[in-house]
Amino acid sequence: MAAQIIDGKAIAAFVREDIKTQVPGLREKYGRVPCLCVIIVGENPASKVYVRNKVKATEEAGMESRLLALPESVSEEELLALIGKLNADDGVDGILVQLPLPKHIDEDKVIDAISVDKDVDGFHVLNVGSLQLGRHCIVPCTPKGIMCLLTSTGVPLNGCNAVVVGRSNIVGKPVAKLLLDANATVTVAHSRTADLGAVTRRADVLVVAVGRESLITADMVKPGAVVIDVGMNRNAEGKLCGDVDFEGVKEVAGWITPVPGGVGPMTIAMLLKNTAECFENRLGNCNDII
Ligand code: NDP
Image (cartoon, rainbow, N blue to C red):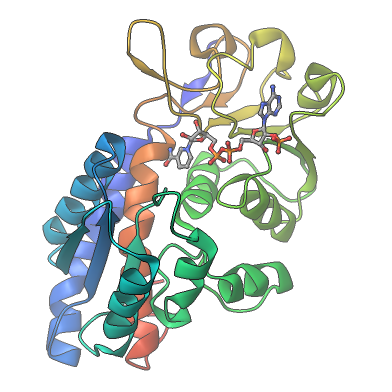
């Protein structure tokens, strides 16, 4: 029997609608709506699309967004000065610096310059550390969205074997920690993993975040597994595709996310949730919207 499709687009639309219905209440309670500042440096076409989508989604949810587009030539010092200004601006709740940055700018330095309570991406070293220690933190958007998709299946994570392929700081490592927190037994695979198929075949839950078209084929998946495909690649025809051979794997898996329409829309929905969460945290009343 073919896998059930995890409809990330529909779940994300539901989350966005839910946030939208809560925004008027926030305005009433606090006298303004959450405000997200998005900074983009240079002309990277993919970054421009991502940023446009983030700004549009923020506005559609009834929140305020400010887009700050800086030239490729901006210095690290100027960018840090801008972040300092936004940190000090009480009307700004979330600051997102679109990555990658030009080579002459130190990304770590820039991310760590963002006030930790405005770090909507959850990339600040203190948020990363808090996540690892199980303390209150802003959870990065893509891993948070993946956990939402897993919850939507109703498949219990408690005691399951979860395999995460990819160990990046923005997806692989944080999602592995979230799965561990959900009491899964977690294995993290990467480019040096010997016999990847033998590892992935043990997975009841398989999360793939690599960036390689069709890395995961049907013979590498346990029958009935939940498969989350984070990858965003362009195939030979220029079509967006994931890291999982969707057509083959859907015949084996129990649940699977499509690309597009799986993890991608959830990332934006979680950004809106994080913006609202930063707003609430800053204005002193947690948990209304989390
Ligand atoms: P990175 O390039 O930072 O990390 C890729 C990881 O995959 C590394 O850990 C690498 O291992 C591992 N890897 C590479 N080749 C193999 C292989 N043959 N077998 C097993 N593991 C391998 O990528 P990101 O985590 O940033 O992104 C991964 C994918 O997810 C990309 O396609 C990206 O576009 C997409 N993405 C999608 C998002 C969304 O919202 N849908 C958000 C973020 C990312 P090693 O550490 O050993 O090098």
